[in-house]
Image (cartoon, rainbow, N blue to C red; front, side):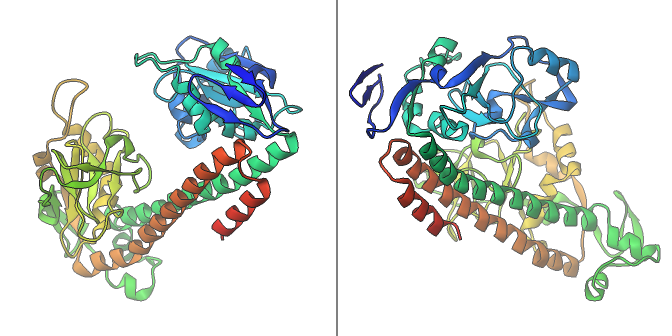
Length: 451
């Protein structure tokens, strides 16, 4: 790296700074750069959080997705430095190297392997600004120069300590961090709202179609705690079936009787169509990551209102599944051959298949149905003919659809909004951190975007 006036020259980028900005080494604006212990941590069911590279891949460390370690392991792994709010978790190796995330407030966190702890010096740098800088396109291009195509792509400690950091005055750092943080806060609010919406839908599914709560309450002479017109849709007794007791008047059905498995979808070979990669399948929530247009070659085809379920290990165990609501009407998308496509038959609403796939009963059955060699096991689609469920009466099925369809639609709207805000953030980010856009103008743009 060389500096000529205000021009930074690196192997991959040239950037010009405003006169009041300065170039610095990372270790010059940090009170410490701490490497992780190099022993393999033993995970625990509960306890302090373990920060691993895959946990910071989005630039945010989410405690709800992180693994845990025991108290003894935690104490051993914080011997060099105990992560605290205001520190940054930095991934130094592997698929997600070169990404920074903040240590959440009040969270007890220790470093996993391939992680580094950065302790920004508050008098020099706003830790939130530093996170945005390290995750910026200019730094992504810079760290790309350290990729050598090997499995063990990494940034060593001397390289990390010497990473270039462009800093405006501290007050401007805080203002930039606030603007970008406003967008991130709205995106995170949408994410939490979507979690709540899905939790409501899945709880209703379980209550009606797994635990049979309204029927059980009526059979026992209790109030089902539902509006009277809705309560009247449910029977007040059970009858025997191969599944055990099911609501009277409902029927025990093999899955293919009520849900199409891998329905036929027409898509000519070579036609450009939305492609969904397994990596973009969500483990939580019904909305997958972005699709890309790719000529159809070979894979599972799907349309709006289909449910996609990963059938291969470990994707199935990790809960990779999605509800398709991101295509144009009549459009056919495609993806991995390791997807199973589900589409309920009437009167079941299409969202029913997604709720079913998220249930413990369905996932346990699918996992137990896996065949193949170790590490490459998958669920044969034909095995689903041995999965039985209680098919509800028409009125109950239709009412369920009426109740949960708005939940899915609202989640879709929030996801679309978040993607728009993320695109805006990613557009503003390089302009703000290079001085190409004033804080005042950026604040005006963000205010119009968030209503």
